[in-house]
Image (cartoon, rainbow, N blue to C red; front, side, top):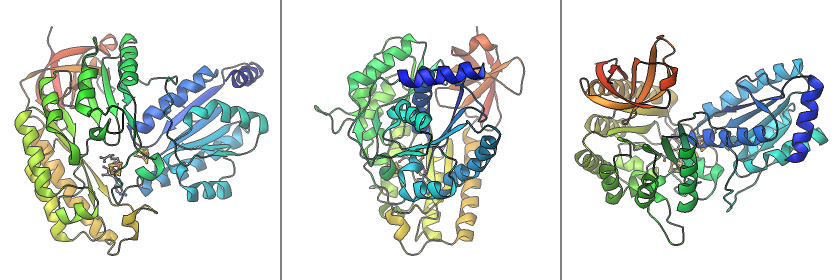
Length: 455
Ligand code: SAH
Ligand code: SF4
Ligand code: F3S
């Protein structure tokens, strides 16, 4: 680190200006969290963070969950190359999930030779060392690890928001849903110790954070491999005990092991937000079994019903994939049926994307593109129709909102997030950012509310 600092200082002195670094994130909250760590390391090394990709050092933290994520990266690399032609000293790095795929790294080595540094998801804590090597040896450095058992604690992090933060509680995934590449690029499931998690949360709170989002690919299997084992519900209670912390969210819950204990803790603990993201993926039990999701349609519906009964003000959201291999119109109708029965507040809908190396990629009966797109459009319409009906149900109520920023479109207004994850716009100013303010929801505008503030 010190050696890297020295060259960064030397470069910056020579240029007579700060040495800028940009971290651009593709993908999910895990990647966003990793990016904060990368930026933390870069700041410690003397870089000045920049929002612009026209910086001295640019790193793309990539995602490979669907092919369009990969295509976006390749497209943007062309743009980076044009920037580098104007500034030949620019250093370009790639990391993240896409880099864990050998075919991607081969392609970059061959066709994107202007890239200077490549590493993966398991060794981000090595950034300073790798960058130092690149800056002294000046050739393409590639360092990808197949996996790791290690959890590196206490990395610096440059947080994007002063008042809220993601907190990793586990890494990797062991579920191997048959369509999904995440277990291959993020490795085996590893839980952090509850002490490390609670310590991190306490430090964040000292630093002004009021809301944390506990992050894991399947938080419901948290702690199974710890010694002694610990349930996610128990962890949630421990985190809720941190004084000064106001709100807790978590992502993502796999329906297969969502316990009654968790529902109770959510119900009884006011700090736990009234929002549950419960990915459905498909409403057809036959397809769910092919997907290796380990639950069926009826089981999912019963679970959703139980949650709504216990926590009536909960907002349920989901992920749905359309066009999984072998999906018939009947299967698709089952998905629509679940959507109509659960009535999600919102849903992310995805076209199935074939990921090389996953079991589903080798399945016969891949669904033709036109059929997939037609189903996708019909699903989206249904999801939007229902969410327009559902949202707005709280008009007239007073609810606390965490102010996240100024409303870009309306001067004199701020944007806040309700416990149920729905946004509300109301009068306010920059000094409100990070505060929790009671707001009367006056009017629904489809996916958000307009409100007035109470004293
Ligand atoms: N661990 C989380 C999901 C992470 S990926 C969970 O299990 O809920 C986020 C979403 O991307 C998934 O829920 C799924 O809906 C979607 N997804 C994953 N692989 C996909 C693929 N091959 N094609 C289309 N969508 C996919
Ligand atoms: Fe992918 Fe399934 Fe793991 Fe989620 S639980 S990351 S969908 S394999
Ligand atoms: Fe993408 Fe990796 Fe997240 S593949 S969805 S960034 S875990």
